[in-house]
Length: 159
Ligand code: DLZ
Image 1 (cartoon, rainbow, N blue to C red):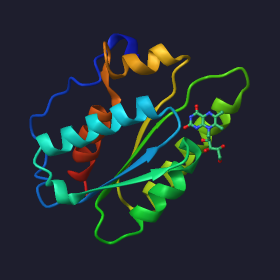
Image 2 (cartoon, protein in one colour):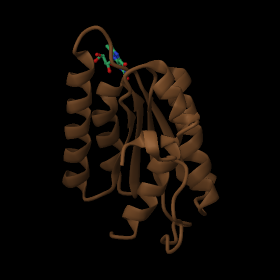
Image 3 (cartoon, rainbow, N blue to C red):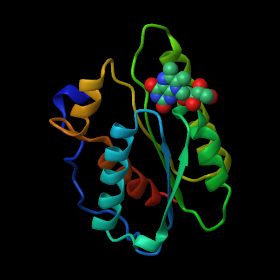
């Protein structure tokens, strides 16, 4: 199902693991800041709403989505971080830069997750235009930040 037919803020929370003692890092790309701030807010509030303590949520900014892999690695490497959520928004432009960034970030985050055996969540929007991004950052299709937070919590149930 594409996100056009799904609300990213609606999920089944039955059976989520207890994450009251878990520590999360949220890495936020500064490009498309209006969107990434809304995604961060969604992720942060969803973690709090599911029992995570505010002092156990660490935020770090990186310049753009391309830097999310390294930013995530820095925190995944830390023994006291249980999961990392990478937040970004890469909007398709006149050139193919978005393809290069999206593929690099997807691969980079996967590599970090497997290297450190920790959930590293792809909270990156890859829309065709600004409106599609807004629709998924607290708009008509919900908030991908919410979805990323729930995904991190669910994955911690496996570790
Ligand atoms: C350069 C660039 C462009 C054109 N577009 C975006 C974007 O839509 N979203 C985003 O997060 N970052 C973008 N960047 C910046 C790159 O991610 C990166 O920060 C720079 O290429 C420096 O490495």
